[in-house]
Length: 309
Figure 1: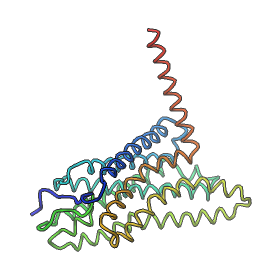
Figure 2: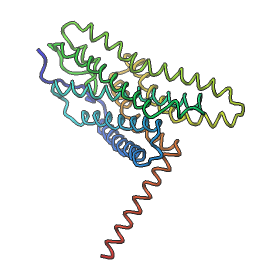
Figure 3: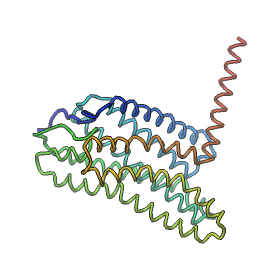
Figure 4: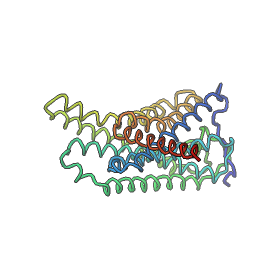
């Protein structure tokens, strides 16, 4: 029979964990503020409603939702009901997969902008970007439904303590007492689809970008064109480098170190992504500046009206 409740090893036994909880709360608050600001700027500024910023808006939305799901779990008790655990796993892994898929959409946008600058607006339309995003949402949801669905066939007759800080797929299916071969197969396939394909596409796209840049005659123009990619490259590094470290060294480092590394891997990118785009994208900086100035002007007008009354 399925166990009614599952427990998470979580951060038990990690020294000074209260300071780390405070750090995670700070990261979450900053993530909410930064991603909300980016989404507001794109939504309110009609000049930013371009195919590229549709993908940026979707990334900010995914970051906001994904970090919220994780923080809700962290603030919960050590024990979680079976159904809640399955629900949490579905949403958290769906949002995490969409972060990688969204980087593919942004990579496609960059390679088209640099390789076909004169035909970019004809080739990359709102409809195309929205279709790509919808396809990747469908792919992520379908893949996670399969993962969670295969878990529901397992019985847990031994320990129900998950060796992670959240309802992680790998540590969960290893607790199953019956045949876990289908779960092991999907556990091997999912990283290929979620991490391998996006990373291969991004590397290939930047090989094409590098080839296109090499054909530009002047150094200044090459640097100017490459600067349009620095924000996206930063997002790729923030997402893929930490998770690659966890996958390579996760089995040899201390369990506490793995849990901390995994939590940082999932918590930091949603906070850093919007900050990087704000700092490296002049359009968003100008839009946020106008937004804050407008809000300040409205507040000033309201204060003056109140004082006169």
